[in-house]
Image (cartoon, rainbow, N blue to C red; front, side, top):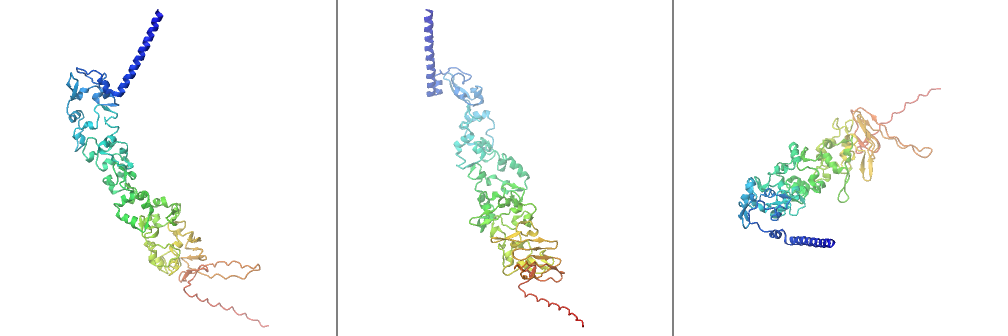
Length: 529
């Protein structure tokens, strides 16, 4: 008997358990379908005063947030609500909405500019009064989304977004409720930007050269929210800079010869820093290093042209041209664009031969005395002289095949004094110069003439080399040795010219001097037998 009762009890409990579980499942389904309001409605409305409305099964959804409004968190519903009818369990706000929030949140409406929802008392347009997923009790996941619901997309689809905009932190720059500055900004103009850009603020305090717009409003060059250009610029760097720098605009855009570094890519920002620098003209680095950042290798131009490398400037121990030594490439070049090839500031012969006229050498004569090429005789105008004969004049001042500066001198730097070349391009041939300096002169033996010697103290008198000798027994003539120079006092130097016969020969424009008659040998006395 006992055994059968036990079995009957177990069967009853099992059936009851299944019914209980089925009831829970059904309740959950009803809750999911009708929502918590329907479930709460199923609870009988109280007919007497309650101290905490969130207890039990009534207003539990008002606490279902990560962050709770203070009164909600402590169950002090009567901080904002008061009974309208206790028996009906109906409520009303203690004060009008604007006054209600302001009663606790003092000072949110202080400022010259008030946010429109605050002026209209629409605090609940932005805030949930009970709780939210964020500390500010915002109705959206972040402030950016909330502001966008009224102000639209301030980025206007542009790609480069300001950091606070990208992260939805509008309050970094704007006060939410009131401000003393336009557009509810937390500060005005430059001060607003430097509030975050501390490093730049410190830099501007100590920098020697400050870009003028930086002293004013950053919005002269930058967009506040977003841009389609780097660093939220209003335009591409080139048109933005040229909108102020009219003189550079003319050189960069209208000049026959343009500098690609100025009009392509980062444009002005390739060489200049936009805010400030310790160097003149807002240069990123000294001029020579800035130029070498591109010109340390050949640059292929459109078509077949090549801009040659000037990497020799970076080599230790080289003798640099004066403007290069002074760090001033603009001494010879117009850096933004100009009227002459190679961005030269003035005309300069680009060929080995140049019919002489002063205008053709305008660039060189900007610094060097033009008398170097106009004066035949001098005692101090140049070190390149044979006695008093000016050898610059000898080479350069010719009506047709004058040698240009390029024929003997490197333009930027050389391993020799006076920038003398090791060799000079002549079509497919590199003509060797073979320059050898001495204490008072020097010599060269280029491909264009035999070894020629000059001396400033004692002019070198040329001697004509001997002609070929009679072939020897083997049928070949021994090589003719170059004539050795003879030194003479500097009082009356001959007029010399570079010629193929060796040393400095008589000018081919003048008839050769007649050789003095050889002295007759003395007659021998015949002894009488």
